[in-house]
Length: 199
Image 1 (spheres, one colour):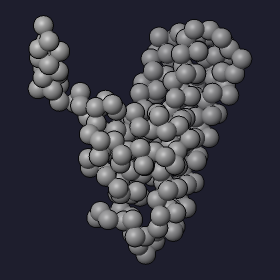
Image 2 (cartoon, one colour):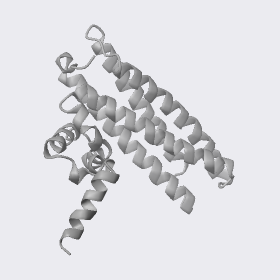
Image 3 (cartoon, one colour):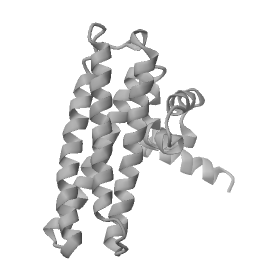
Image 4 (cartoon, one colour):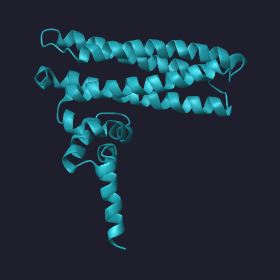
């Protein structure tokens, strides 16, 4: 009987290799240190560790790679919320004031996605000669994405319908992830030019 847990673990390892990389507690000790160190500058470190743990082995101690990972994950999460917003609109789940707020939300999330894509583009071509300007642009665009998400939340303030509460929680979660990405970019800005180790 004692061998059963071992067999289950081996099955998980061989059938689901992502099980190890996507579970914070099972990331290697060294990889865990990388992600914990990177996330220590964020406002929501636990969420940061959970969402970025799979990047530990590639980002290691590189602030530029962690910033890029943070923005990439944020883009994925924004797209997920966008899909949910589109579904709510398509199936006409909301009425009246909530429907108007939903339309505004769809617009603000489209803007946020544009700003995040621009940010990722800059992070992929960091340059020593324009580093300061690039960091200013990143701060502006990611802050704007965060404002867009907050604006979406404002439209649903005071509403308690189940669908709306779910949407509010999703948007709030994305805003936390965006805040973490901004913190990782600011860390890169303060670390300076010497941190650009990758091409």
